[in-house]
Length: 275
View (spheres, rainbow, N blue to C red):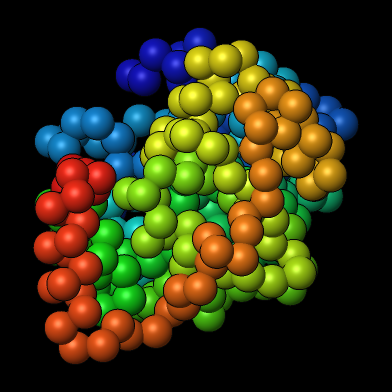
């Protein structure tokens, strides 16, 4: 049993070859459902743990759903996205949720954003998310190879073609070079806010937690308070909105040969992880 699940009264309700779902029933009057998507985790041989349990359940008081993609496929596994949508919609109806917000880190951040195209989501709060893991789109990002090579069919080239006009997207990235293939590709739209943490890398959620800032940051995010979150992170960590120079890539195939050249340059620079 997951220790965090036990601590906050979170129960596992689904456990298949591809998916785990955990849920926390909220107290009467809790009208916001939080859906937390797990990252790939740190144990490649184990099932990724649930993430953000304290914040997602409002310290054990609010309704929350925890989604674990056991395939680590970024929801590309056959039928997985449809099952996740069904789980979210059924639990939201049972809880009488007036609002739905999603949260995730890394792969979880990508999934938190992607799912909003397929079911109602008011706010998607994404820490260090991918914009794409498709080899023809983000082939210059060499991380997570053991999982990416296992995706037999990429149903989604990237987030750019799968935005919902009804969702407020908030993404928080570090600005180190290894993050550039993702933050430069993250969609640019009126309902998308991308905040950059200068000098930080992939673990933006861990950085905020380390400095005691994660709770307040998530509070602003869940409320859809973009100006408040922007001001808070600027004051605490000199965060700033993504600049024009930090955009410029899209969900389009790179020219033939460009992937190999980009990969070689990234490895030679020593700035890119391959885990």
